[in-house]
Image (cartoon, rainbow, N blue to C red; front, side, top):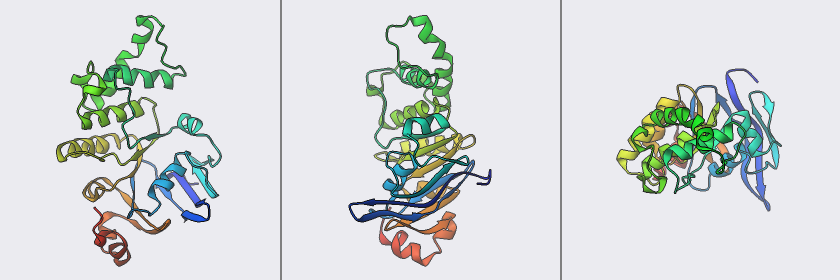
Length: 251
């Protein structure tokens, strides 16, 4: 695999009791890009995403990350290799502060679980980096706020901070704008754009205006197959895409 591509799939297929949810999908994700997966409901986006992040095992096909075959690799090992997933439903500890949540992720990155019995001075060695990550996602003023008390959009930003704490090469974002109002969407979109300077990002997203504004490359899935791929401008001119997705009222 060329160094240009950080992730590649070959003939990726997933069947469930005779139903083919993902059918012979070939993806090539360029290093340093924002790559979106879109398509109507039932197109296979979520299944494909779960295959890439190793939460499902393919029926057939290959997944390569940095030239290494990770088809049979477990999710935790894939994360250690630098391929990290951020979940659609915010996955933070609600009764910990934002700072504590990021500190947990930093401890995991350093091979330790959250050790409640350790002295405060030992835990505090992660504080500077945790505060830096909070600043990176615009949460400096929320450092001592418990996650359960944070607005929804800020909680999603915290989730991204905990993902960044794992020091990934590539982030996979599962519907990062789900459930957000316009103000939060703008903030998280700007955050994703900012962090894309350092990380490769693959996202499943239903909000087409977000996809249009953020994505370098878009792959359109329908019925488990790749229908088309290109920039947003190119895809809006593709009659197949208009018929299957863009013109069908799916926003």
